Length: 260
Ligand SMILES: O=C(O)CC1=CCC(=O)O1
Image (cartoon, rainbow, N blue to C red; front, side, top):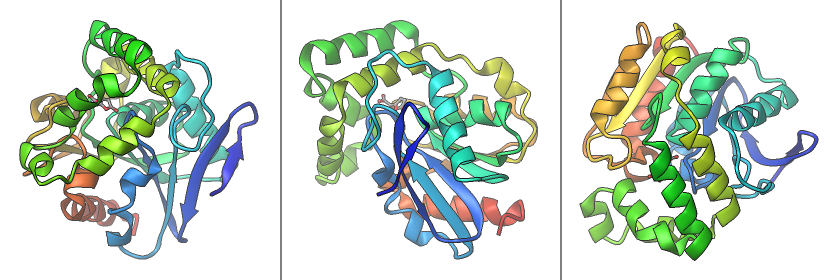
């Protein structure tokens, strides 16, 4: 897999297909594989770029804490490195915070936003500090069960479909996860996100235990003209538990804004 040197940090990414660029930014504790089921369902004529945040997947793992500004700069520098302009940037959860920040900063890079299962602010600082402390003391295992309950609907878990994703979470570097917790804890994008006027689709899951649909809708309401789509049934990670519905929503948005 290609790696971009930015130059102080190696970021792992994949750049597939040709055409209008769509960039995918993943959730805390996962990696670019979380988009595996969605990408083959998208229409042709797209350049599909996905990457691992610092501290995640195959990217470098600098010492925690990370700032949201650093995560946004990583995305910005990767897109500059790949000469990407006018992309649709798809961010889920922590990746959705990166998406909001990048759109505020680089409208030359981003012409459309898809914010999935995210908000202008996610949770409270103290919760993220407690989660980070739990990982520091007990590794990823210390938070895995609680994270699975927030990520996936009960039925998905009961059918054993969450197990591979628990394994992926356990494979996350604790330092990288703690870095991500710090970045989320320090982020409040209510004011900057309310200034965004670019085309946006905001997606929520009916059984999301991390960013409930009402919170996600509140973020959609901040942005003039943003569309809101509730996926049902789905949890915090629709690209994993409802890839067909997610791909259909994304493809429809790409068509409506003339990206394909
Ligand atoms: O781990 C969670 O609770 C869900 C989550 C919040 C931000 C993110 O990226 O994942």
